[in-house]
Image (cartoon, rainbow, N blue to C red; front, side):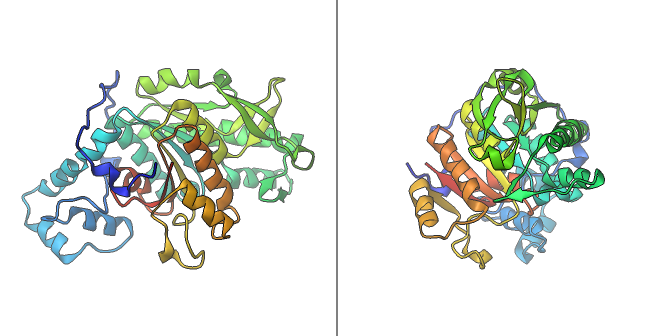
Length: 355
């Protein structure tokens, strides 16, 4: 059933989820950013337009600036928070799985934006789960050790030596750095890999003879995650898992995020990317498809409008939807606070795919 993009705003029949056992208290409130919105329905202040402009690096409209300037001190912030209430009510207590990668991992400012968004979402009662890769960091360490990265069809060729470095970098460095950043921003994060608690069981990819220790997700056991999310912690998961014999495999982080979202019964799967979303014309950013259902996106693939590296991302979303995830989104991780824009506004920050 296709969902309208403005499904966020339907308040009829909304019920608050039971409160989480643990209420998060930010340690450093000044580092958290307010929700930024593009399409909140309070025309008297144009709050949404000014915040979206700020996120895009544009100055706010003169009417919005005038309204904010003429408001009593603090009124503008109160209006933003009050307009966020319908979205908080809709998603409170719901699990949101976020795949973190691309430009948002390379830029310190964007990394801080993602971390702050996750902490804010956790503070208002959502249950975010973060899945990450770390390709650039892996390449950097391979270079330091004099190993040339090799790719086939966009996948990293992973021999035994490379697999050892992948595990060290993703699990030991990138994962713990993200955990530290989230903790510092005011939440409590727990770093895991697919091997911890038998969270993921891997199997070799079909073309393992050419790719080496590149794997797929054979099964998911989310038992270890549920107590964490129930108590208000943010799981941070590296996309490394072992098979039944204990052999580690490097698994695509999009795939891991999609399979975890399905196993957790997530409300939403969000993939952060380096593009605006799904485009009808790959050379025209203004041709962004804001919302599409499974049938429509499959037709775009058949017509050649979705190609290259976008196909596995779309396939991941389609598979998650087929397994019960309510909505999936491919969003522009280059936009500051794109997570909040996607979850807390009608317009979103990319392409939403529905079942």
